[in-house]
Each structure stands twice: as C-alpha cells, then as structure tokens.
Length: 416
Image 1 (spheres, one colour):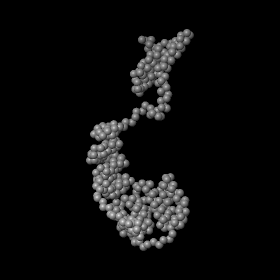
Image 2: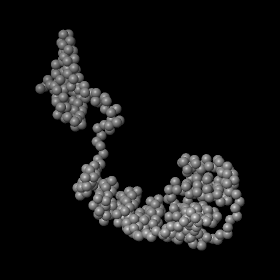
Image 3: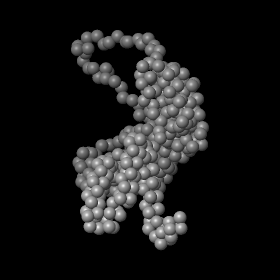
Image 4: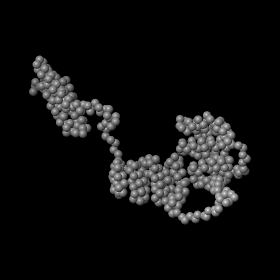
C-alpha cells in the first residue's frame, strides 16, 4: 500500500494526464452514444476499444520499455491492436471527417425546428371528411395555437366544406383578437372573411364589417387604404352577385326590320355616355368614399379629356399622389398619367419635366425612376410629335367650374 502511494507521488504528473485522457474518452463515448442511431452497437465498440487499450497499456507499453526482443514483440502486438481498432472505427472516422461537409447540405445533427403538419388534415378534407379534418387541425393547433396556416385552414374547412360561416368567423376573430397577430395576417384573415360573406352568403354588409375592422385597426396605412378601396366597390359587387343568383326576366326589344333598305343606320349606333353626368356620379361617389382611387383617376381623365380642364385633373391626381401610405407603384403610375395629360392638354416643357423629375427623385434605382429618366431624355421629341398629331381645333364652350360644382375636395399640389 505504501509502495503504491510512493509510486503515485513520484508519478503524479503521469497519473494526472491519464485521468484527463480517461475523462475525455469517457465524455466522447457518452456524446457519441447519445447521437448514434444504433447506440447498442456503439457501446459494444467502446467496450472492445477499452479492452484493447487496457491490453496496450498493461502489456505492450512495458514491452517497449524492456527493449530487445520484447520491444519487437510489443511492436507486432501494437500493429495488431491498431488493425483491430481500424476495423472497429474506420466507418466512424470517415463519418467524422465528412460530417462538416455534409452538414452544409443536410443541416448536420441539429434537430429540425418544430412545426405543425397538416398533411393528414388536408388528406381527410379531400376525402370529404371535414369533421375528421377539423379534429386533426385542432390537434395541431393545440401544440401551435397561433399558427396562421392552421387557423386559415380550419376556417376554410368550416366555411367551405361544413357551410358554417359563423364558426369560421369565430375562428378568425379569435386569431385576430390576439395582441400578437401580425398586421398582414390580420388583414388577410379579414379579407378572406369578407370574400366568404360575398361568395357564400351574398352578404355585402358582413363583408363591409370585416373590411372595416382593418380600417379601424390600422388607420392611415396601406392596409387600410386597400380595405377602403374594396369597401367603396362593395355596392357594385353585391348587385352582380344578386343578379347571378336571382336572374330577373329580361324583355328583348324587337329588332329593326329591313335594316338593309334604310337610308341611314346611324340611329342604331350605341349612344355615347354623357361625360358630364358620369362626372357628377363619380363626384357623388367620392363624397362617400374619398379613398376610392380608381374612381378618382377616372374623374381626372374626364376633366382633362372631355372638359379640357387640366387644372381640375391635376388636383385629383395630386390628391392621390400626396396621400400617405399609397403603394409606390401606384404613385409612379399617377405621376406618369399626370405627365401624359400635361403633354396632351397644353402643359409646357418645364411643367412636364418637373413631373417626371419627381418620379426620378421619389424612386431612385427602381424601374419607375429609370423609365422616367429615359422619358426625360426624349421629352422634346415627344412634344414635337404631339404638336404634329394635334392640329388646331376650336373647342366648345364648357362650364368652367364643373369639378367645383359638385364639391370635389381640392388640395394644392405639393412636392413629394
């Protein structure tokens, strides 16, 4: 006992290194067993490896120390042990070397991110098993309660397959009432609910209520502008849906007889729409829905093309251009329309150039800015071509304040 203590005291550095090596090998063995797909086989490998290493330290190392024939025998035994270890671990060593490269493609040993799977629910839905599909979706949502894909799939099955629009509305409202609901997902959910109200129930009021939630939730944003645009056109959509659902009897008037023998058939041509009355209808519509950019653009074109009032057309276009949160693509479109009207209806070169320069300044590096820059380069040629194509024509007398008569909101042009 005393001799063993003295030996340890004299060789404490070697003992310390041996302990470190044993601890490191033990930790490596434990980690590899945990990550292995066949842990039992790996445990057997480590046991055999431990036996071989024990034999090396107990028998072969002392043989090298003795020298002579014992050293030669120890060398032969060491080669045999090395061959055995190579047979045991060669596949694992190859995997260790190749793993950093293969991890670039398969993600390595990092566990996949947990996420819901709705393939079973979708398959049941295709088999006309909506109840089973709903049960499977709810099972996934129990694990991932705020998953937007699952919420929309559940509401879709309820509304379209089970004809339960109130249930679908409750599902979407529960998601949207969450304070963590992202704005785009909120808007997508309410827009889909509005579509279902129109498509399944021909209910424009229900669709309007769903879209109004977006306007109230996100005021002065692009989402609210899009929703307000849809609300402005719900009346026409409702008429189309009701007409398709309940078609009234239509009386067809008798056609003109002996049309080939008539002196003139001009009276048979369809009459042009009265632009003055149409402008009045548009202005009245804009009083109720001031954010309806589609109608405001049509009104601007009537002011310019029919009444030759470039100033009123400019006011309508500038009002849309300067309205906050409009999509950049639409703003660029309206600026180009304004430039077209200025060229066509008497705007001078400097005025059109300023309009196009606003596009270049507002959208640098974007296609709209590049197109405006190219148009600036050939603007003088465009003016020359317009002058050749537009001979002098005496215009009629029109009421000068046609746009102001209906109370159209006017904003002075301001720079973007």
